[in-house]
Image (tube, rainbow, N blue to C red; front, side):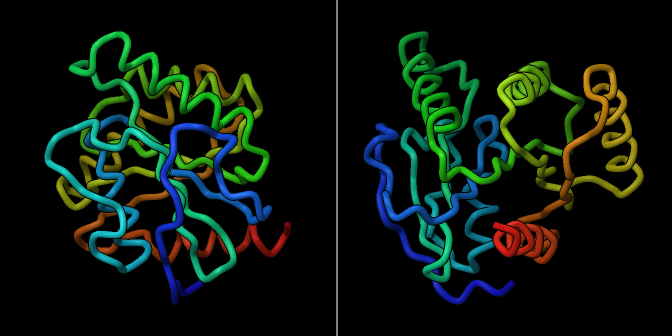
Length: 198
């Protein structure tokens, strides 16, 4: 798939105000500072489509981008940003859970994980929660250009081992670098294959 058009449509904190034209939605989520905005801009080949920031926890709303007039790419708030304070974290959790559990158009959730780190408890618990709620998701490892291929392989192996402690089978996995444009074709082809089967 090639992205010909990508345009921002709406930001909001209320799932009931999301677009109501029934198009499929592919949502991106991850811990704060995982490289979500950079990945979205790389996929769309449009710098500044999603706002990147060196400050973690900047995305506070559900952001819809219409792609090729056929489907939505949805940028969700990051989870687990400690500096936000309890009330702020609770508000973000509610926005995320409402969207994931109530949004029927949500076709697949892409959970972004920083490939440089060991499996994080917060990510593993979030994915377990998705599994318990029957939410279709895939894992997207980000920032793969920041480590060598041997370290990457080792980190992925550790991740798979930890997940097999809970999961019988693993979700699809993608390996990306926003800087090197790695993984773009694979991710977009995966979205296209789901769209074809809808």
